Image (cartoon, rainbow, N blue to C red):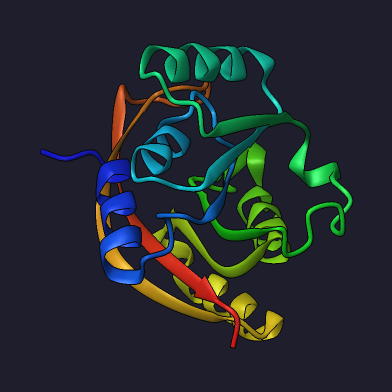
Length: 180
């Protein structure tokens, strides 16, 4: 079984040709799975953005272990970033944002808004299927086209104290946003 990240990156490159030779941003990059995968698919450069210094340290170690050199890192709070700081600086933006529920309410939309500002061509993102209608409305409001590339099932492990179950199987949309 392939990971959602591998499926995402394979589809982004083979269907849309939005990675190879491109300047790619990975928002909320964490330990660098999407960034390193994009680098392995010959992105011109992949820049990972994350607020968590510990996650970025793991990213650095992972990049070194895989001998990846076409990645860079930016430690920042995307929600506090000046929207024009990276306006249309990246060909492609990829991300698996916080889902924007419970304690992160609205966070997914803040990430999406930042991504749309940063991208010249397209944004690829994962969002809970249950939020599809809301995200489609926002995409329409923002004047961007939203496509559902795939419907995925994701086994989310418990990672917060308020999680009651060990894992939860959730439905996730793999979405592509593009400017007209």
